[in-house]
Image 1 (cartoon, rainbow, N blue to C red):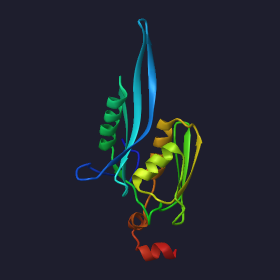
Image 2 (cartoon, rainbow, N blue to C red):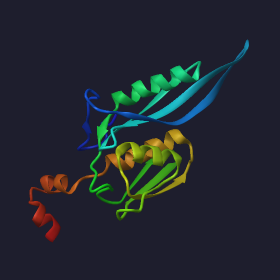
Image 3 (tube, helix red, strand yellow):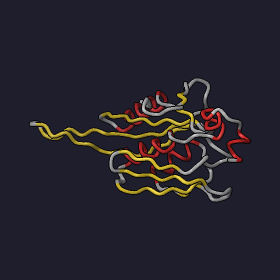
Image 4 (cartoon, rainbow, N blue to C red):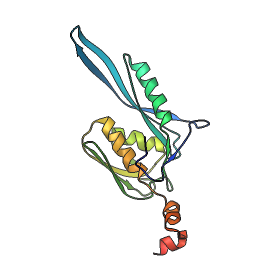
Length: 174
């Protein structure tokens, strides 16, 4: 699922204390010649609030099984996100479909300044101080995926230093 990104560390769910957050449930309708068939689509974010997060989509005829399927799907798509002292390592923009998300690191005590779908993802990751702006589409599916796009592009200082083949001190000096 995350093949387009370099440096993405996928995580196995075994042994992790994962907490799930329901982002949204939509009632969907399929119109057939016999009438309307109703179903439900649920999007869920799971995370250990310590840098590991995953998102999943579940569809079913009833809400409970749609949510259960979404949680199972999210556990299959866990990734590790670099966190630096409760915030993000750097500013990053993400996009998916018509949704655009901008994430900015913030000073300690700021809190999570984010709307519904972005907030669910950032809290599941374990970020405590961040500023965000969501623009364009407010479709929760696309906003969650745009937030993941931004998070998956994050690189810690250690990763950057390793990629450049220099020490952390040299990276910060210039």
